[in-house]
Length: 454
Image (tube, rainbow, N blue to C red):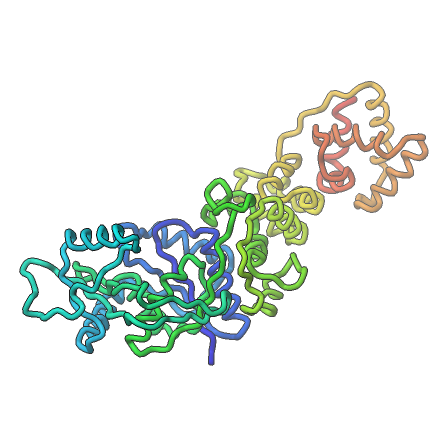
């Protein structure tokens, strides 16, 4: 059997961090087995669905490099097909028209509450004769759910989960306005898209029992479901905006790299031994549902920062330059060249692109001579003469020459490096002086040193 998975977001907002994890897990499962990963936009809520949200979802997936097969399916284009299938169930006696008024439904809820029961529809129109149909009421279509026995979900994460059928009421398949419900549309689309596996949050667990009832009524094969615990904040409570329960664009704008986000999400509910840093290629090779966890995972920004720092250090320098240029306007070619030459030193100290931008200011900002004390000035004058004579302006040679020079003067390397750092950048926390000397180049470096004692 070929594996077919899907990601089916509702376009009522941004691509949530939890949704991104769901997409990643389904994508990895399909890629591991050489199957297909499909995208379905569940845009049946026409009032809340927006093109802006659709664009945000698609751009978020593209940024994470979670690529889908085939064209995206828009659920709103299939509504008539969903309704026709519900009408077919009515003809087969597996569903029926319900003409309950809002007042009658409210009375049912109140009666159930008074008996200490969960409020649910009592089957009032389940077996009534059509001659009793009232005038002026637009009916809904309800599924005839079995009233005896039980339904068992063979969950690939949670194991077998069973509910008694008398806990499930006759759910609405088609609303009184003629539109299908989420319950029906999801089942029909999963069947028509040949979905074999569905990994999703355990907040959908109750819905899955209802989906199974619809699959059974339509006589269709049921996908394999895996329900994963939701992501929690670092304090163990339900993830909220204060923890980072925001759109993927938030993380992108904060300067995180997509591979770091994917690595972080992968480890929120899935494991491979003690491995923490896992590339996309390794994840595809190793990912199976066997290692999906049953316990809630915590989103820890400190871990994410460290993980992102790792991916920054191994990132291509030109790629990082391009990320910087998205944030920096009107930069000269000379300064771009400095950034490329100095990138190795910069990225060792940055955990995000935003931090990289702050550090990169030493190569971008206009130069202002720094005032230094007389002793430092004397050291710099000697240093200037030694640097001026160096032809091989490379990091290794500069380090060798300056270390030798400091020994000749009876100084520590720091006694030369600190005033040199100060006059080159005006700062105290920077990449190594050797990185900076190479990035600025011989002429600019000497000009900056000369400016403090000329």
